[in-house]
Image: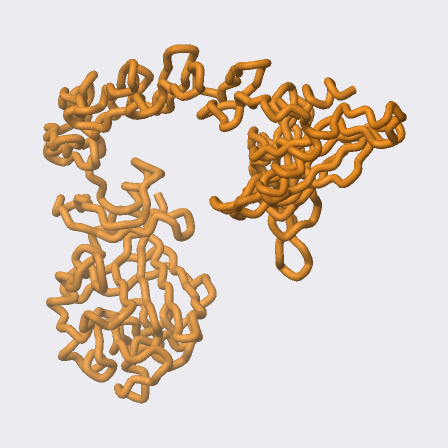
Length: 553
């Protein structure tokens, strides 16, 4: 029985690990109980949160799978270690102080020394004392801290009586052994002369395993050598990667883009791509070229004029793009369109054209002018002849200006009576007026068979009554304005109503009148001189006006 005790506790590193074991303590190092762990476990510390926001700790033997994570399921700290009593510290809690006596077993009068798990912390100058004796034939063990001098005296006294035969009478108490030692947990053994080769621990990065008079080291991962002191990954040889040690060597797992024995080679440094971004691929690279370049190293200029994209014109390249200088009468991005006489003709050539400003060539005079095209309203194809929305252009002009046109087709403008007449003369044409008010309401009206007489009067002709939501009050435009000459500044109605129109005593529609604040009444002729449409908002100044024409065939 005694031989088993000595084997188990003189060399505690043999197939076992001694760890502190307590639950719910304020600091791991205050635990005063030890346990022998199984070979597949380690010493551990686990943090526990309590209701008042404080932390307590559990210490003991933890399975390897638990030690694989430093965080518990509840998010608290967990740390593991592989040396005797190493879980006296952990999770940011301090361990034992540097100056103290040994840690000793503290078990008074135990008949089974193997069950002794209590420990105590000795003061400086104290040692671990042990005593084995037989009482009534039972082996009784005692262990605790004692001052060096007292322990030595007790050992000497005990040695004098061990083995005595007092008058040949049977003894009730028989001393087996008594002694002192100064190593941690050394007082469960009965041989003062036995030395533990694992104390102090000779294994720098590993676990010491003692034999009868020697030791071996079970090295931590990555370390090797008789004392587990050599790691080929320290210092780190992998410049841009992670080192993995093997038996006597190492290998590097390189970061993306680096390669070589020590991950020191980057195919993109320096950048081989003259006009692009280098992308490393294993031990090579690819180039993502800037616009206008191609080739292995993005060094070849792409000519956007090959093949020639200009159908009827000359291509002019500009780095990664091109422009077309079109032949006479052709237009468009690729010089593929013949000029049209109006927006309706443009739409027929390309149904996908958006609304905007385009150049047209008038059908009779062949004069080229820019026009604003509405390609969305009622199937599109409308040529805008008047547009007002902010009052930035003054429409109180003379007849000559109304004949030639004024403003800018990109902003506010009047296209010009001469151009309007020629466009309308190209076929059966519809006239459309669109208006909106200060309250954001809107309306429109259309008249069929619109045309103008010759200059300079440009007499209005419409072929029927208006159709729409703005309403032609009393069919005034159809009956009164129809057949009227266009007059402007310098005429009776032109001055009276501050604009230019097909006035006839004078008008209920004055879309070329003064642009006043929308919703207010113009100062001219009780509001009739403003930009008004009487049957829509009476004499309240309108917010926007747009007049358009479109061929029907």
